[in-house]
Image (cartoon, rainbow, N blue to C red; front, side, top):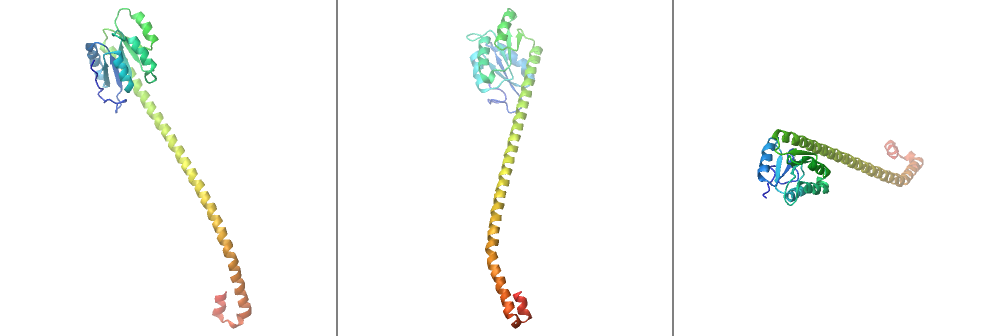
Length: 223
């Protein structure tokens, strides 16, 4: 059947705080009815008319909740749910089964075995559907918010570690430069000490032997 891009665009996550909701039913009229019931929630509604089509959407999108019809040709809701649960990305995505009123108890046992979180019995009550779905929408938003906060915290900790490492490296470099400067200063002072001693000795000798010949300015210059 025809597919429909979510209103937020064909990305894995909506660019705003809206979440994706997947509607799966082989009857187009049922999909239209579900869409009308859930439009008021202001989320991104994606429709699929078969289990295989639903699985294709799950390859590229995250979903807050999946509304999955039980009775579908080729691949029914239970088979679809089992495949959904086999994929790591959708293993914990909530699934609400849509089922007819007859034989509900037997289907519920099978549905819960493949990971259903609840059942919506046809004909569904719009207010009841919105109430059920809104719970999972809010849960998905809070989970995403927690994920982002955790990511920011981890990034902040990583940045702090990198800054601390950079500062430690700078301190090590400064200590190394100081040692080099101390070594250079020692070498310079050692090299200057010998000629200064000779200058001092010869100056003293000149004053001692020739001091009487020097006038006051001469002695001051020698000193």
